[in-house]
Image 1 (cartoon, one colour):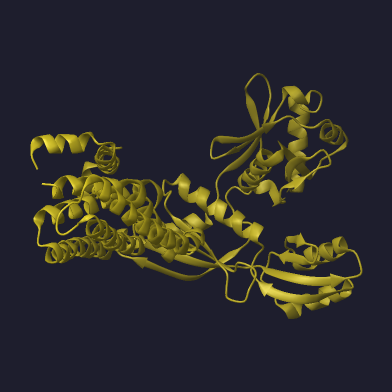
Image 2 (cartoon, one colour; image 1 turned 60 degrees about the vertical axis):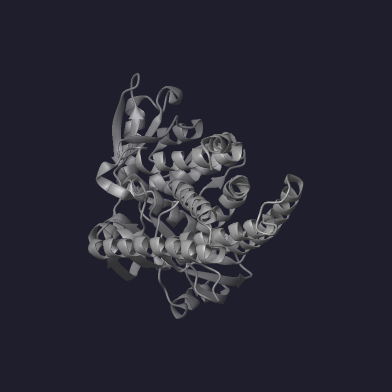
Amino acid sequence: MNSETIKNLVKDWRVALVLLLVVGSLVGIYLAPPSPERGLEGNLQFGLDLEGGSWLQMEFQSVVVAFSTDGSVGDLMDDLRTDLETEVIRIDENHLEIRKSVTRADLEPIFAQSGASIVTYQKGVSPFTADEVKRILNEKVNALGMQDARINLLTPTGSEFPQYVRIELAGVDMATAQDIVGQQGLFEIRVQTTGNETEHVLYGDQITSVGVPQKDYDGRWGVGFSFTETGAEAFREAAIESGAVDNPDAHNLVMILDNETVYSAPLSGELAGQLRSGPVRSLSASTGTGDAGLTDAMTLQIHLRAGALPVKVDIVGSGSVPAALGEQFKTTVALAGLLALLAVAVVVYYRYREPSIVIPMVAINLAEIIILLGIARFIIQLDLATIAGLIAVVGTGIDQLVIITDEVLHEGRVPSPNLYMKRYGRALGIIAIAAATVFIAMLPLALMDLSTLRGFAIITILGVLIGILVTRPAYGKIIMAILSK
């Protein structure tokens, strides 16, 4: 092609879009922010397989029981709390979550004395508790800058309730991974005195229990929590001395986790009146109405626990990938990708015996991979499964480019513009149907919480979308300009 043809191609919006996205992807990988110490890896985030790190699989020490009773469910729950010395949460009309590892044989006498019976017994936790555990672990790893850590809930076959949680941390040793699971933050309650000044009341170790978010009669969400006797006395004294009992609006109750304010609100008039009479051990922090109030209530619940998990977990499996082995995997994967690209180029050349067809195909394919990596850099870690997805995108991408080339060629040359557009449109129709099939097949895997398959599905879907929306239209324009010469 001469320089005039190249200029015209670059001015075409389809080709210009591909070039712009390639440049933007390279900037995102290498220059935003700059990371010269990472070399060719740039800002790409690698998973456990390629970076090295640790994984832990933990079992919830909790059971979910379906029950039947003609008596009071509240009395049954109180009996369970007293006899087992643990939290008992009502999931729905006939299911209880008992946050302790206890056998069915040990539970049956307690149910019997309350006039109830056990219908089903399963190890695990309710979906709400499982999601709460996941949120807490996410907050912990995010606070340490590991935003791409993988946390997955696992439910055994035949069970309705999650029984395990698996956490994968790239670039983290086993001891650190165990600390992340077990550590708690420094939680403190303070009371506003004069102006913006606050005074210490108590620390999180004086909080004995934290409830689940609940809605009151006015439709406001809140979280209930209880103090020890010592904590209740300290809270009452601080509220009286600061003036919060007499003038609540001028003296907010402030909750702080690791030096960051997570809640600030005045005492209610009812609570202020109760504190005048004596210590109050059970309180409720109101967070507002609607979805925003519920979200704030769930977040506050996590803060009140100071990062402690609502259910005890035991580590039942663990492993690590040494950094050196991760580097070896990385080198092997890079070599596999390069060989795949070269193999594709050889096969295409063998089919057409024309460099002017091979070069645009390989260039468009390479551009597609760069754009895909530029997007993946922000949303997903690269592990062996996602790399397999990248290689699959190379193969399916070439298939689609071959379909376009074969459709538009007419006796070895480009037909008239009208016939070309007709054949090109037919080729895009074939590709769009194939892409839709891949998208529908991969979508359930992308939405499911399966650590290995999810990355493969996401990369495949992204590759399909980039191909249909960006690179295939550009290739159609390029191949017409080249073959017409």
